[in-house]
Image 1 (spheres, protein in one colour):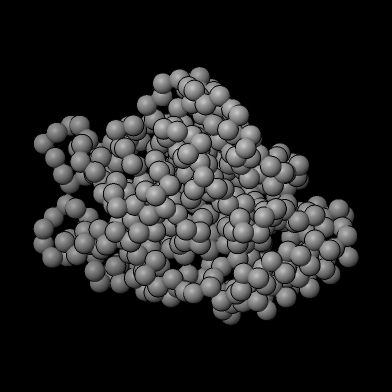
Image 2 (tube, rainbow, N blue to C red):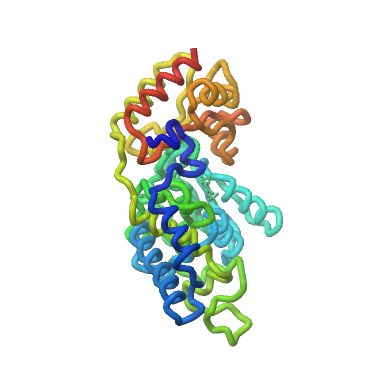
Length: 376
Ligand SMILES: Cc1ncc(COP(=O)(O)O)c(C=O)c1O
């Protein structure tokens, strides 16, 4: 880890540090390059538009889709998720979701439940919150409008089996929350038949805050969340039909998108070994007063996990980690009360650790020694 963030383990909230090229790209945009997107034809504006389109292409590769024009940029994953949830063409008004959803999904669904009579049902889950595929095959799936899946939990790192869902769900549209996973876990939207993918730029993609996006396989299933200028079809008061303009009203966060492009083009290789992460979890599981919340099957584990202590509240545990060991981490519910209810850690929550590709195995040793001391 770099000197500026020696023991930062809060990468599920936002990643830090970023590749140095990110700050450079943002600064170059603000001080040198400038220009708006899609609104003029002089070279400066043209270069800005080309940069955004290059990023769109890159995101297509990361999401695993050839339909790059159907990727729209938003200010965060929350906005992308709300675009689908609030704008969806509901019929039966029934939604299925996983046991590990974040409030970016649950609050939007809950608002739709209260205001528009949408009914919600949780998918059958194993103890770690992973979808119980066998039980899912027994469920009556007629009349389900939408299935929402948090690809990787921000509480225990469980990666859901997206690759197996299409066969079970038939033609039901799937909305994937890839906030935690995109950048660390492969995603194949076309191959796996995913309909919507919401992502954020500032977590595993290592980009700046204020960036994110949404992939819509069939944009006709959703109405835009925002209406406004796009620099195209400006003679009309209606939003243009063409993608991506239909969902990109207003000037985008160009400085942020320049930063995000620099992040995806300069992604560092992972500095730690996956097996050393597995070893860390195994050692933590040996501690008598510590419960570990992680995937039951390590092959479904993302770089996030939680612990709870039998003796100290998560806040007090995290406080000691920071004060005594300079370890920065997140404690409590991590905006995911549903997940904590499932994991039986509600309402106190957990102490969460989330890695970055800049972590090295020696950082895990330091973390393990610190947790051992605080847990004692
Ligand atoms: C699983 C999950 N979904 C959605 C979000 C929301 O992301 P953003 O704050 O970038 O909108 C988060 C952020 O913590 C998350 O972990």
